[in-house]
Length: 134
Image (cartoon, rainbow, N blue to C red; front, side, top):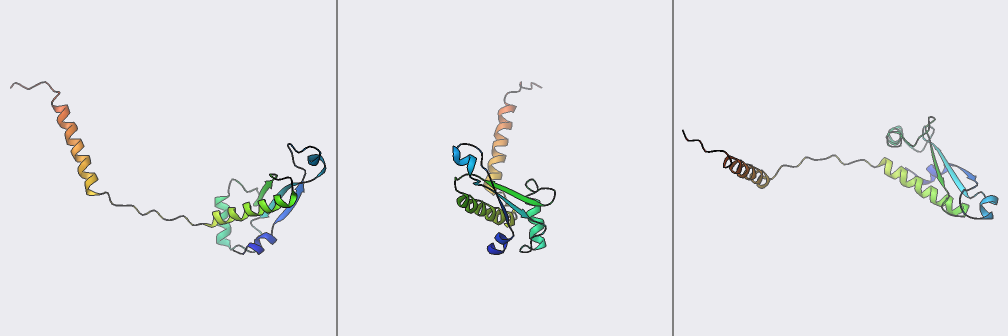
């Protein structure tokens, strides 16, 4: 995965931000929308694309587009930097392979403790019964 190749495939759009900010909000388009077409990406292999499509299934549009927005800062450049960092971390997280779980053996001491507790409970309950006089 090459960062520069991935970043070159991104499309950005500047939109007017919502929320507080006074006149700045009404005049300046500081909110950044990032669009990434997963199916048309040339910097990712087919295996990586399918892995990302599975991980991002809820985030992708019908056309396999990933759309992110950032309006944290009042600066367009700062928002662009933030959204690129967020996108790259999403890619990194999506391509990370999960470790396979190795089942561990139950320690003998744990088995002994369980059987001892079981025996103690059995003895406790048997002493509650009415005595048998036959």
